[in-house]
Length: 318
Image (cartoon, rainbow, N blue to C red; front, side, top):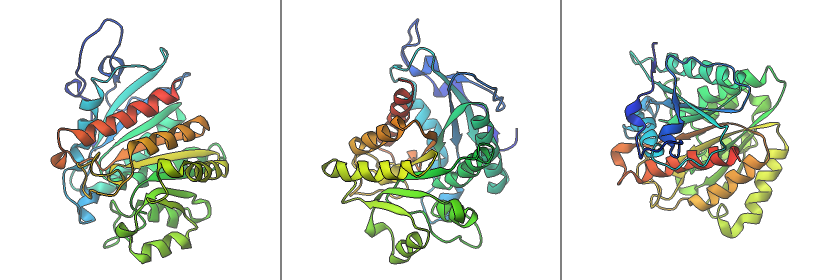
């Protein structure tokens, strides 16, 4: 299939057991995006193996290798999911012939199909430009349900930058969404850093009535404020799409990204925020993006991304 690569068993290795004690024994590989209806909740892993948007945004190449690096760190992890949990790996969306638009259309349609067939998509990236087709797939789905959706983005950046030569990139996905769905754009960013966003982006955020907490507030010491912010936002929508940009974490935890941040958030506050979101029973879809293995150290960032996936799926399956 054009713009798609089937999942590989070489990405899923680890200790062996007789009772699916590890993730690599749990995950089922599905070829050719054969997504089938499931009565029970199902996790759909889909890679966005694309870094063209990062490069277009002036970033460092290498994020296209992110999805498989996450899989390799996820495979050896212990399986503590509910015994009925189903996790499928549907492979990677890729760019062929430099046609990023066609790849994003395939991603949009794949996410839509996953949601229609009772799957919760977990997208592994790859550049943050994945958020635009990701949301298009979500929007197509919720149009069939009549619901509203809010975006919660864990990130140092607003990602509301203008297009470059009329083209989207890793810094523009939420501006593209805001412009296309201005009457239903609900956006909360956790971990914004002033040093990473010029005044014009704060003005853009204000023009779209975006909600945000700056890094000085997004920490355990201010948990009451963080919880109130998340609770109020979730209460205003029917469903939630979560995006986790790994460059929002402190580079002590996530060195392997295009734009590392020495002053970023910690896994602890992200875990607590995710638990609050998941307990609302409104989580619809997730992406974890911007892993760049070329700049990682001892797979620290890939391991963090894998632990994000494991924590989210385990918390959902309780």
